[in-house]
Image 1 (cartoon, rainbow, N blue to C red):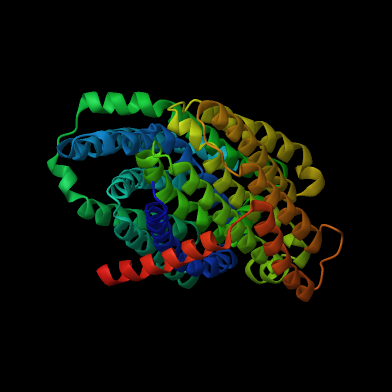
Image 2 (cartoon, rainbow, N blue to C red; image 1 turned 60 degrees about the vertical axis):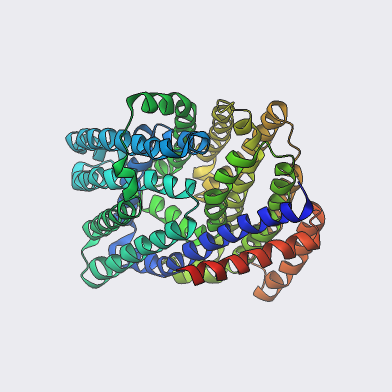
Length: 490
């Protein structure tokens, strides 16, 4: 592939990722402000209950999803055009049936599930709301996969913005203004999911003219089963909330989730990357230039979002007390580990992409298991000593180990050379230095010192990754130009 063609593909990928980044950022900034107000209105106890009950959704969603979304993304591009709609019609039909059955079972088991997740049967009504929410949530992920496959990125991005704005607005009215507490949180999320699934169904209405195929469902389920098991293992990472609840209490589980939300905007890069990266990879992996493009994006990603993570952690001692009621500046010591764990997730996904290219998705099961074997035991052992900081440190440690395991498998299964070790080195340098600056050494460094460290980290990350200036400029220019084009086509 020629250099102009390679850079044309890079521009398209960067621009699509930029569209998602902007679309995800706007409503998340709003929620970034609203969530602390919500916590102030309902208290950490009720918010912790909401968090613990909400974790039911990702666990049960794995059974509803069955890995068929990722399987459809792999099969659809290689199907005749007239059969592609049937692929996604099959996915939607299968998910709808399984989601309704799963929701019914959750409603029947609401009391024991409430006791299991929160320690009390008082949250049974919250389990019922969560069960109903599962149905539209499961269908929206199916529609999102179809829109990604069709490269309708701007449509999907706009719908995501609408959903986030609806939930934020309802939270403001029901929880903050009307003081409806836990029920207001549950109603806000349910209404937002219903609105999103209706809008997505309208955007994908041509799919309803296609007939679902039982044979296609079977094929998708067989291909997706290892991926579904992987998703289950990934969901088990969220068990750290339950460990925190068991050792420190429901309120601390709420505080930990709030800390994740405060640092969460850094994860937007991972979301934007994943939305465009997987469809591109599954189409282009056999192209000789694919590895070179992926390596370039990994370098730009880790330098760009690593620096963003470093800068966000630098101001965490000032932000945490404002957004987390009762938090001391020293509580921000958890921020670097959490933020760089999100950056590590992006590296992890790229590190193991060779297993996907080789169609050896079972390797991801080993990767996810390696993460769990590090993160959960470390969390359990250190929670009493280090408090919720232990959960953040363990999450990062598990991500780093899993990335190494993923890359080791990837290199054996598919000949793809990527700067994964350099990317992980950037993360280690960033999290270590900033943790010391925000209280890890016993005192919080002055804000000017923390801000002055940002350009030094940027220079270090640039040197470690070996990023070329022209690649960085190309990606940034592409993101800007694509955003402009998308705006003109709306």
